[in-house]
Length: 112
Image (tube, rainbow, N blue to C red; front, side, top):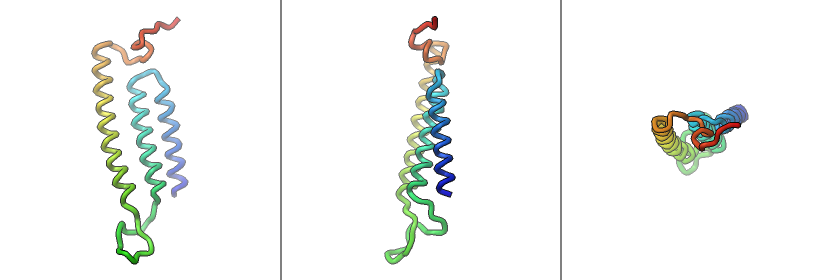
């Protein structure tokens, strides 16, 4: 199961890099959101997937699930949603002011 989720994280990184290399601001913002979620998924898998184990059983437990990676990833998800929302507002405001979301036009270069 961990191998499958690691491959899924790799596919998400591939999609995110494809979106980040585009010229549209919206695609870049979506690419950064997908990349952050791929990293969250990868960190969750690296923390270990144990089925049937309780987070804390006591001092003499043979196996338990560590709750720290889950808590840290939950915090990171909330922060990434806030950053994505902020970037979307900035992109919308930029589109209102300039009338375009193409990065080449925003830089002022004219294609020859």
